[in-house]
Length: 539
Image (tube, rainbow, N blue to C red; front, side):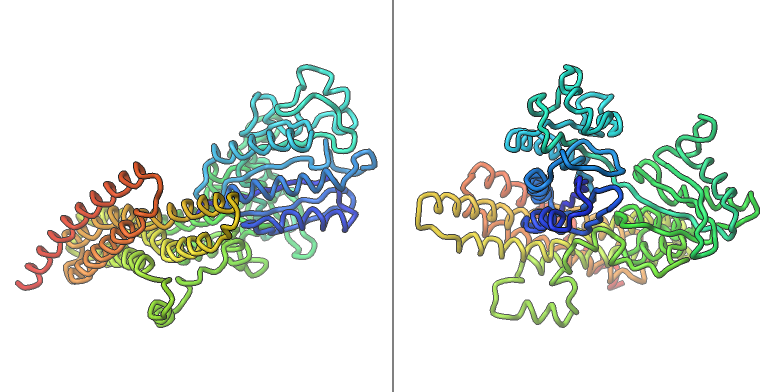
């Protein structure tokens, strides 16, 4: 599933009615989860954070901006924070399975729509900027609302979308795409704020006296926390993909040791993307010689313990990891084994064969990973330890993707049923219904096809586990192959049964050809592996 975050800043932080009206417009957008509403009285500004799939977030952003334009009058606005319009800034942030290019496209489409439908001048910033000098928000906002009328008279300041016309009530809006910003503090076992500042200057991008610091994408300062009677190095990490959190933590710990103090742990302010913590967990597992082929929860726990995230207060993954905040509890994969079997056995058509096939694929990946883990460190298999580490690290994300498909298959089927129930009394309703049916049909084909693709990557791992893995677990590797074979057959049949409903016949033919090819390759490899395993086990 794709997740995008949007963090619009609105120029109203005092009138609760206006703030709630904007929040309601966002909250009421289908597919959007409003995570946080943070008003500031002194700044007279409210920051809202919401997430969802790309198109839903795009609609939610427009709804929020439209409501802000309707309710906020910039002619009466005063506050401590720089601002240029009713919705001052609106960035899109990639969170999961979304590229920055996709967020840039969202930003530009939103800018075009807002300019056209609401009549507001729109500037693009950060990764969405059309001009390099406009990447910087402070540069775009220079002169603020009060200087906007004169600014728009200058051709150099023609907006990216809309006319260069001053709209007194609404001002202008800056829309863009940027990476996730992580607010993070390092705890020191000292009250000396000066020591914290020395570390901050050493690690930040803009170091002391204009000299560069250790890391790019890091802003840092030292301060003293009276409540906890300790100093902290407070950091904003503006691109964790280019500057990994674990590397910064290790450097802060090293610098602290040089100064005769210790970094006892750390504190996360706000939310964090799951990938950031997973990367840190893998880093520390690999430093311990363990590899990274562990389930997600184990990797996250390694990050939490290694970074000392519970040093000051308990760290609750469900509340602090952004994907967990927005992802409704997966109905099927959160069940017990007994509960899932019972759900499949009921008279309802879903969950059905598609979900069961996906689960078989996930079990195949998990068993292959288990054999790999039982081989790493095992005497007599030294030549294969590195290959087995690589196998486990590949198997875990495949198992996770196939588990996700367990629920996705059922969700796609339910969406198809919902489309079939749409009204069809008028020509317009018939057209809308048919489009919904075709969209849903494509989904109920794409999910099992996705399972087939994932299983085609699992099968070589099963074969390698059987050939090179701990031979005491050969039967487990063989069962992994059998599960992969069952998953492929089930997914293939689910593709076939739904292809007839797809109106786009060339696409249907293309999807069928791919499914046939994938199943044939999976059959060939699993058959050979099972035969070889059986021969060895009979010796």
